[in-house]
Image 1: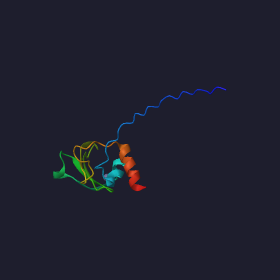
Image 2 (image 1 turned 60 degrees about the vertical axis):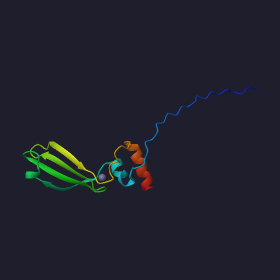
Image 3 (image 1 turned 120 degrees about the vertical axis):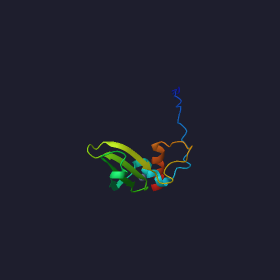
Length: 113
Ligand SMILES: [Zn+2]
């Protein structure tokens, strides 16, 4: 009896090295994964506007308390400008590698499981 010869192709794993998770605060993993949960704090007009006829809408994230300001042209709804004011610790330290969303997602799952 002869044994069947089975050739198994070598499977080459070419996983990229994961960026270090050091410095990634799990407190903010949900917002990095799902996006911020904005709610409106209020609106301002007049001197707060960058241009005539603009309304400034101030938003705050319910989870991480980061803020966002949108300058909206009141008559057309066109977004003229947007600015973010992140809570300390939300952004990774300067010089750190940007984490892909999948890594934030894994961190979020680990922190909430
Ligand atoms: Zn947030």
